[in-house]
Image (cartoon, rainbow over all chains, first blue to last red; front, side, top):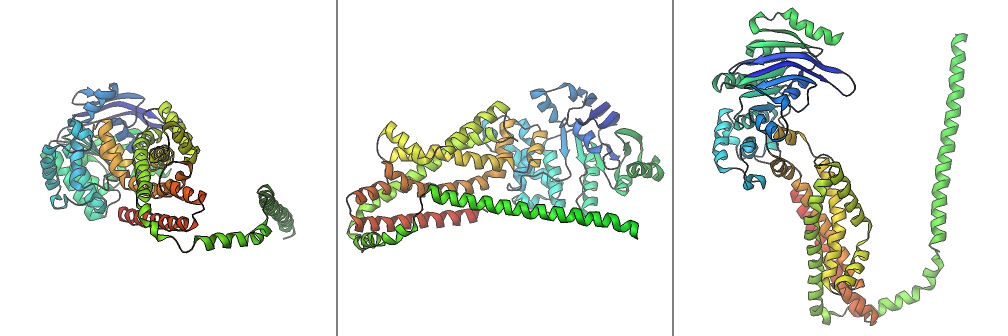
Length: 247
Length: 271
């Protein structure tokens, strides 16, 4: 479903953020990327989503290489790829329902949606997605009034409204309390299994990775340190990822 | 101990020198400020004694202006309405023209650099020319009356609103905008669904403040023939009808205060 091959990126100051990075995620699989600060985790997701242009490599979603696309073709390809960031990035003054429905805008090229209207059919679907994340009762509430955990659930519902095949999550539980973090990880696990999504999630919480991942990928200095089924990842290997950060 | 004392002494000497330099800099700033004030007094030919000798003239005008001539109150309704409507027209037309310019002039959403510089230039030009000059220009172009006043306020508002709108857009949280872009939404959809709802309350607040300012400006524009209560005020002064002048000043005061209160109340609701 998602196949990343030889992905490399260098920042304008010359720092090598990613080097020949390989990773693949199948439908229904939850792969968690672990690594220290500045190891290249966020850069990896941003390059996959083409928020950053990689210097080399390929990002294939269902066989289509995103790195070769631009303009309208890239926009269309992005419909298959949803991104959840550390902060939910909702439009605070709009309702929860409207925020979710905006996830589907890319599929509607009507004058109504260009003028700020929401496609009628998508509102019903938005209610369904909110129900999936357990927040349908907050549909009419302003997004700015939600707690961090609720906002992150709404961001996931917005991602579902996009009807993606791949879900990229960049530290989705970083600013949440342990209970809310567990909720979000359970939700991602369930969505991967039930919606057959390929989920690639960057995390800092090692324990959550052990509990929820199918596979764990370690990243150190922009390179793959290990890529193993969760059960085969040793504590020592994970520890080494963070040791290199301290060094 | 002795070996340690030498650098300490060196530090003390250096510290004393920097303190003296700081004092000298403060003195230089104080002298510069004094120089600016003195040159301003010379250039404006300030003569406080003239205020004392002119007190009889001022008292005479106040005596002739009281009590206000309320028999003309009916005649003030139409010019008052005209004044308010000049401001409403100028503000709405200004918003309509300033909004697209502000989008082009906001560094974070502008489609390209040439558009950015062109929009910034136009906003800067319309802002730097005072509204009174614009009024003189439009009176010459379309004749006397409230219409040139409305046009003058509209053009001047482009500059004021355009700059503030652009700054508001530049300072908004870009995370929701980036998130929408990554969903595959189109440019216009990102603008209407992300940018507009994020900045709308601030833009409305700025617009209401501008309306309040424009009502005050529209009173003055009448002095150059651009209609409204200012025009009636000028006529009454030219005819030495000081009691009517004081009535018009009371009406002006009520309009300005009312607009200010209404604008402040609406802006508070939006906050």
